[in-house]
Amino acid sequence: MEVEKNEEKKIIVAVDESEESMYALSWCLHNIIVSQQISKSTTLVLLYVKPPPPPYSAFHVAGYLFGNDVIATLEEYSERLVDSVMSKAQAICMKSNRNIKVEKKVGSGDAKNVICGTVEKLGADMLVMGSHGYGFLKRALLGSVSHDCAKHVKCPMVVVKQPKNI
Image 1: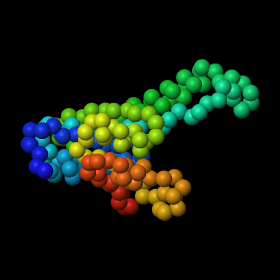
Image 2 (image 1 turned 90 degrees about the horizontal axis):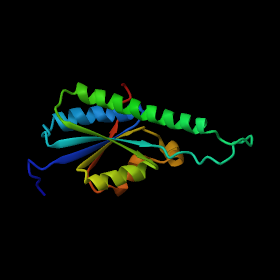
Image 3 (image 1 turned 135 degrees about the vertical axis):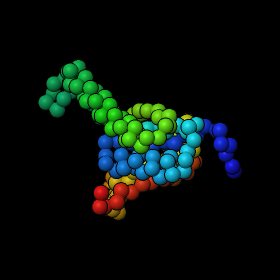
Image 4 (image 1 turned 120 degrees about the vertical axis):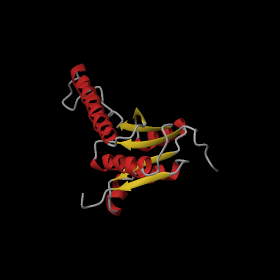
């Protein structure tokens, strides 16, 4: 299936606070956007997924009610983390000197579900993710978001592994 040159494309890059995700974004900008001479009708979507909020019980372990200030502090920290990650990702995009549209999306919940849902909802043409490079045991215990996404997304997906020497 050949795509028209003027058709708008969407490339989603999943970003988080890890070096691996920022490396994947840089790799995407250099190897997909620049080297493939992607047109201005392409939108790069930076997707950050906030972990689901922990299931707070009404009572703290010591039996005290969680104060609103504790919950507000946790929410404020979460927002600062989102701002920090998106600022870092935006700076990487600016350094690429490529005139491309950049959108920022923030989801909340299970990462694989949010990423796969966003890919489907936006009709993404490609998904780019970093790899933490976990071995078999760690991957078995922690799971692999990129592996789960690869099984479910219906668009091409690139998993970028950061070289050890960086």
